[in-house]
Image (cartoon, rainbow, N blue to C red; front, side):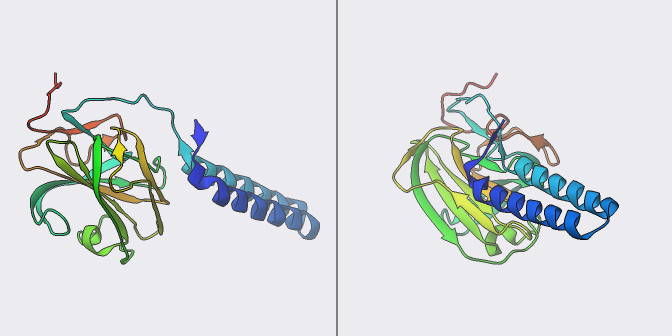
Length: 223
C-alpha cells in the first residue's frame, strides 16, 4: 500500500499542525489532557494517511468490459437523458465513495480521450439526484473506437477538490488512474442503452477490478 501523490501536501500539513498542538498541550495542560491531544493528533494523522492510500492492484484488460471507475457502493442504475455531451438517452451507473473508501479513480475502458471539461457548481450531498448536473464536476469522454463512454467525477458536500489526469487527444489504457476526488463523493458512468449491466443497486464494487457492464459490438470475453 502506497500513499497517493495527491495527499503529500495535505498529510504534511496535518502532521505538522498535529505535532505543534501536541507539543503545546504537553507544555500547558495536565498530563491526562496532553495524552488526549496526543491520541487525537496521531489518530487524525493516521486517518488522513489512510484516506490517501493508493492500493497496488492487478491491471485487468477486457475490451468488452466496463470496469468500476471507483471503490464504493452502486447508488444509481437508471436510464437518463445525458444533456452535456451525448444529448440522448444513456444508462447511468453511479458509485458513491464514503470517506472510508479508496478515492483513486480509474478509466473504466481504454481508448482516446475525446472530450474533457471541468464544470464549476454547487456542493450538494453526492447522493442528491441533481448532483450529477449541478455540483462541481468533471466530464471525460473516452472513445474505444466502437463506443463512447462518459465518466463524470462529482464533488460532494465535503469533497471540494477534484483532480483529473485526462487530456483531450491522449490515449488511455483501461484501468489506468484517471484522477482523485478528495474527501468523499461519487463517479457516474454513462453507457449505451444496449450495454449489459453487471451490477445491482447497493452492490459494493472495487475500482479497476469489478466489471459493472459489458459493451455491445466489442470482442466479448464474458464467461
